[in-house]
Image 1: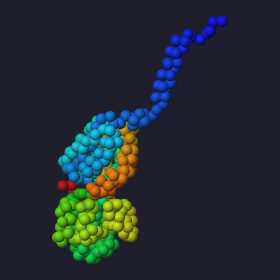
Image 2 (image 1 turned 90 degrees about the vertical axis):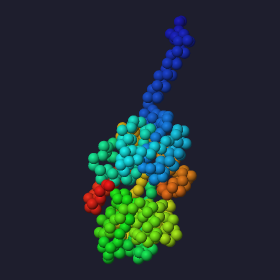
Image 3 (image 1 turned 120 degrees about the vertical axis):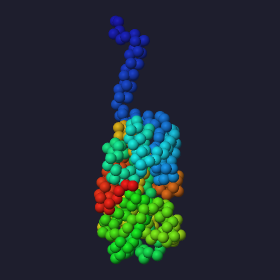
Image 4 (image 1 turned 30 degrees about the vertical axis):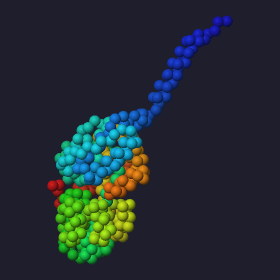
Amino acid sequence: MASDLPPPAAQSTIVRCLQAALFCSTLAAVPATALAQAAFPTKPVRFVATFPPGGGADLTGRILGARLGELWKQPVVIENRTGAGGSVGAELVSRANADGYTLLLVAASHAVNAALLPKLSFDLVKDFKPVALATAAPILLAVNPRVKANTLQEFTGLLRAQPDKLDYASCGMATTHHFTMELYKFETKTSALHIPHSCAIAVANAVGGQLDVIAVTLASALPFVQQGKLRALALSSQDRSPLAPDIPTFRDSGMPELKNFAVENYYGLLAPGATPDAVVKKVEADVRAVLQDPDLRKKLAGAGLDPFFRTGADTAKLLRADVERYRRIAGVAGIKQE
């Protein structure tokens, strides 16, 4: 009886076709996110820092970028595009190819700009896709030792007893440091005159006795706190800083009106708005992973930065909340962008 089966050569061809079809169907079943994550990156990635070299955003980018470059086996290039309080570089990224290869090193000051400059050519919330936050530079309220206040509660009492008698210096007009103090004044119903400085000059003048009260980046004042030349009262961050775990936060003061007080001076990454979710999730996961590296954490500490990982979703919520909060406080305190 003749066999109904095709000849051996034809059988082999049929098997190969079936195997190919099975492979294609299996490949099609793999989520697009997994394929995109496996492919990214295949060329250098650019981090755009909108402030000069040496600042928190730039240092975050360089430390984080070096470690991500090792993980990705692709260079991470830091490009400093300064101007208009960070808006020049942010606009560049908002118009870049939405492929994940150009990312913005976002800072809390970008939320300030969004609150105070309604005519920007881009929308910080709508035109970007948050990737992750990575670091923070805590803001410190400190006083010259001659000020008769050892705690934030005592300092608040001093302001209430002597309204408008004390001045304070921050790191500049419309900075997060300035907003921290204005929010504190609003919550505690106190008053004090703001004198804008730079962080370095404010610290030097407080140590020298020309100023009594400063709100500055922790790292710029910490050596003088440790030497007893300044007295630390509180940090604006939600949690205490690993750089100075003995310094309480505003929330630690025990004052009911400050129980939820937190102003974070953060740095992280945003992508152009149309960037694929798979690429964004890939970078977010890799940022989370490298921030666990003890060597990287040591480098961050050396730069005066705390690890401050937040997911893309949490970053989006924080940016929206900060823009609204800064807009509200600006109206109350009459803050305008210079």
